[in-house]
Image 1 (cartoon, rainbow, N blue to C red):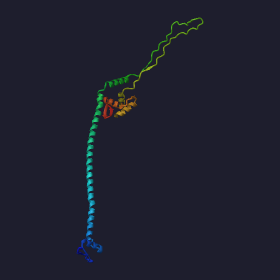
Image 2: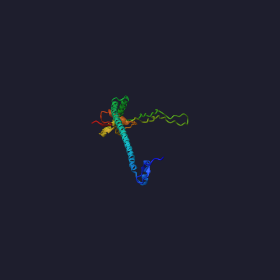
Image 3: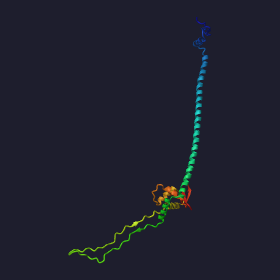
Image 4: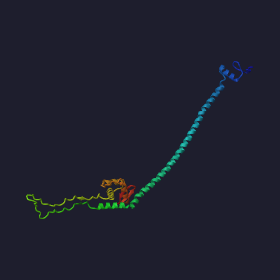
Length: 244
């Protein structure tokens, strides 16, 4: 048996068994009854519109966490950089102190080899100019009473034998001094300048003034000599001037 149609349309009086059938009839035939669904649509739209907002909130929270992590990592790097800078500064001070003390110590206690070189250079500087040595010439030797001798009849007389002097020896020239030791050249350069000069500049001027040397570390040798000179004053590291 079919169910009783207890629901009737208020417009046309048609009966329906279920409320859904009545609602569908009202919307299709009379254009009514859509208020309920019309009210649900805005709710669904509001829910859908709210989801992106929640996602945006989650995204902003993630960015904040990432930014905080990066900031913390940056702070750690800054702290490490400060520690490294302090260590480098300490190393620079230690190296500067060692470099200032090392030349002075070497100058106070020169080796025997250095002393011998300085003495030879000092003697060569004070020695007079070289002299040319010529061997003395011998007087010609001529036999007394030498006559032309005849060995046979009609033979030509022999020539008189004259024993002359031997050929003169070639002049032997001694090596001339080169004008003083490295210390003397350094003193001349500082005295002529009359102002503070760097060790490298002093070494260049020494070579220009005629000091011949094949030493590739001439500037280092000049620095050692300056550290031991009593008439040279140290202005600052690597800079010296003549004492007044």
